[in-house]
Length: 500
Image 1 (tube, one colour):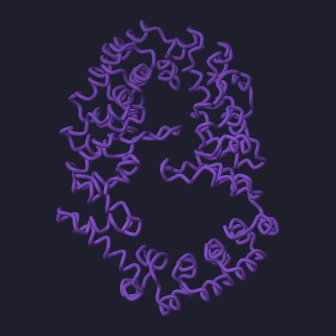
Image 2 (cartoon, rainbow, N blue to C red):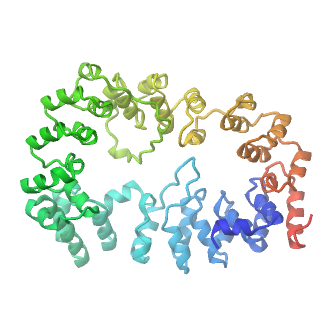
Image 3 (cartoon, one colour):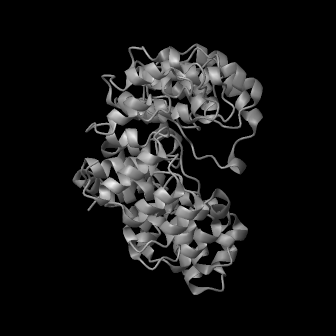
């Protein structure tokens, strides 16, 4: 059964016990009893959906049920060192889940597994477990993979990196590696790269029909003049971004009737002055917008372009920047000081933006700039984060509340707001009035009701009443104000058939 099926199959008593399993105030012995004798739904959420005390982690890792262990392997709240204890688990399912990125909780991304654990996975797991490692690998290990002492790690490093991104010294070392598999992988990577740079090889490899391989070759391969001529009428959008097409083709595509082709040409860093001047007055607004952020333009030239930046309510941008690969903080200054909102948004997305620029962009007139700063900068001010939440209604809005600087005190004032998401903010306030929490358990929005049922300021009589509510029973059971005696009663009730 899938986790969804397990939950759907559970009855009210099992749902209540699942709430107890999630209760942050539940005593360790309560959690251990649920783990040992609780129903599937309760064991599932216990292993998968919360931070666990050390003794409970010990019990989960040694639990006889492989499904329980596999759920813990993908617990986004567990410390990576705790999950790493499952690296040599005897069951295929557990190992497979450990090698997959944990379930994201909508607020933060789980940290990578320890480097030694990743190395153990690469060296001992089946190959079909390795393709989903992705963000489980730390940036430091990713950079060091091609020079790692383990031949299997070096092989995987070759597969994860393009040949042209490696330094000549690293390339030579891999081609002369003492391990034959590493040499073979390096030779294959070099061969593919060389074929991509060879116009005759690209012509030979280019499929006649449209497919992924054709798309890749037309976008990134070195194209011979006859291939360019053949692709011009069929795939102009693909070759518009190819850095091997000659200037005369760039000029031709800059006047192409398809505005999407012209927009792609406008993004080329090698675009000549005459093409820039023509595209700056293009009849299509998307083309003008694409050209307006060209790196060769001065601020005056940008200002002369009639472009419009829309507020599209979709500013989610969580780049997985590696600290060592971030641009120098001062390189962001011209972007942050630009009159162009898209360039300021680019600066706002960088987590190492200098403090004076953070202060400047926190009051930026562009909503996108403010939201991206709030989503990505560790020092985003509290006032900015709250303002962003109140003004931004797009994707990943609730992510802002997970920022360490997001304010909590005083949020109860939003309990009567028309926007249900804003009413939820009131329940982040640890000092919200008891009668307010009580009223919000009857809110028309289900998420507000769910949050209110778990708030510790909720009166005891309301918590007790909600335990028998078909919708909110498990939420009330997760309320940290629930007496421990009631938790034991719910465990005993399950043992006697689920009736309290």
